[in-house]
Image 1 (tube, helix red, strand yellow):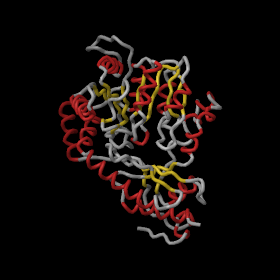
Image 2: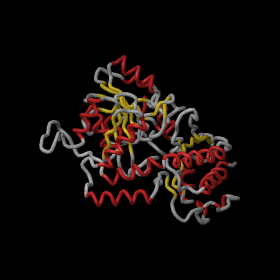
Image 3: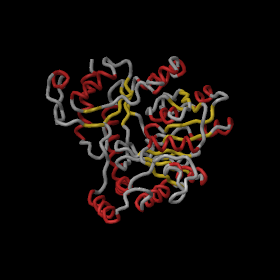
Image 4: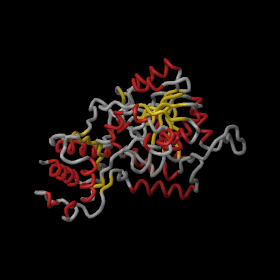
Amino acid sequence: MKHFESRSDLALFGAPPAFPEPLHVGRPNMGSQETFLSYMNDIFNRRWLSNNGPLVQEFERLLAEFLGVKHCVAMCNGTVALEIAIRALELKGEVIMPSYTFVATAHALQWQEITPVFADIDPNTHNLDPEAVLRMITPKTTGIIGVHLWGRSCPVDDLQAIANDYGLKLMFDAAHAFGCSYKGEMIGGFGECEVLSFHATKFFNTFEGGAVVTSNDDLARKMRLMKNFGFSGYDNVIYPGTNGKMTEIAAAMGLVNLDAIGEFVEANRRNHERYSMQLNEIQGVSVLAYDDREHNNYQYVVVEVSDELPVSRDEIIHALHAENVLARRYFWPGCHNMQPYKAFYPNAGVMLPNTKTVADRVIVLPTGITLPESAIDVVASVMRLLTSQ
């Protein structure tokens, strides 16, 4: 491993980078190649590539069982899953959501001419603040989308109470939260439904994919129609739909990775502990903790840096990039500062002070089963040098 004794050892100042190839935040976790190739042989022999094949059916069954829900509706990606869930719930008008999330959550509403209304977050959890949600409710509000950011659950009970009191539909974007729990119950069964992402960068991937999970029979039936053009049978279209189907090859990867979840969790947990041990010793730097009483996937190593440091958050990221450690500033600058929302709501930031504070302080670091321990030591060494007076 590259040794750091003074600032002259930093690649930022001309020294060689610590790693010859970039280390990404979301390097894919992948299970058994041998098992995956066996599934591929089966797919070739069956010549059944899509349209609710046997692997997709098995994948849906196992995920529903794993999450403790009645229905898993697998989709081609998480964004389409969001769009279909929103449409199946018949949301309209305004829907409250956090600005501090991936922009796909807002886009899934905007594409259907629904207005995303951005509520502020709790600066300690980075999740929706129920009090902020209450401040944003209007006569046009029809729903709330909570986001289980970093795999740490929203205040589910408080949001459900608000939904009940105001007659609103509550759903969750659980893209980060596969394999995580809230009060000991697996995330997936809360609200009207929960949406999962199986993109390559997620803790659990199917190359590209997503799903909506629910115990609502009618909602699941509608979503199954909607993801397949509204077909009921071979030539009977009974509902307006789109093409949201998951392929057999994606389901094969999902089945392989489902078997390896324990391995993924253990690698992530080990990485998170090593990061925490080293970085929490640096004054003005803290690693966001997980509640060990819950099930966690530990997929996101989220660091907050104080304004009191002698260097900025962006300067730290720039120095890490020079070492080929591609740290990220998720989800800066917040959806409300992205187009078209910035043009629509130029003063939204007035109601989002905590969102700005968190977005300006967060660094997300590489993890996963392929991450070498030396990368964690490099991050710690770089940050020690940069933050020393």
